[in-house]
Length: 318
Image (cartoon, rainbow, N blue to C red; front, side, top):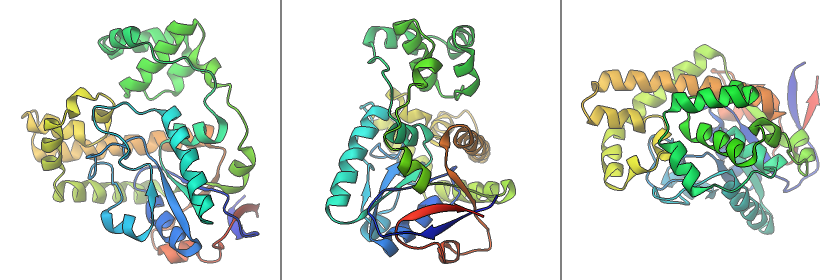
């Protein structure tokens, strides 16, 4: 069944726009925010870091001047950031935006942050500094082997190329003696109505999405991703294992170390970004509980949104 958006009564209830990297959701959110008097809350685990600009496709100063953006540049490279912090800051941002009579528009590709805000985080234990230090020095292959043996369900769904998430899953299992997947199943449902009415995920054909990814990567390097990475190394990028996972930066660091040519680096970033987009789409299909909207490469943003209404949205099957 196809899905379309139609306007309902005017409201400042949040709108949630999700999707894989480079799908075009940020440009749509920006236009929508201008039309309905909205403000954007970034749902991106890397845009929170000051300095990670080009590689995260962070909104430009001009875009932030057009529409207020929240949860961008909220911590330094030497600070940790997680889903619990995202929920706390997002709730504060929503209250501030609504107090001005404006509409919060969540926009991004970090599925866990959408899930955490909409359904809660459950009762996962706090980080144990000693155990975390031990796990972070353990080879990823050993951690994955432990995870596969102790929690096959999490092993199958987790991003196995993301050491931070693997470390956290193993940490929780060791601290509680329970499967990580069982604890993550304890989602709350306080925002289920919002999710049903206002949660949309954009997609494109694989060919179109890959083309857009390649254009984005070329532009990132043209604008100076390598130089940006060089400056970030002086500010402690390598010490923040999470920030270093941002696609583009790790590869640029390897290039600066002489491990591969610029052309090889750019190709590797394109491959990694395509893989990320595939993982994001898989995550939203499994856990997003959202309405899917396929974008047409021949449509403008205005055409995409035309007829969909500029106020409160709801889904109508047809």
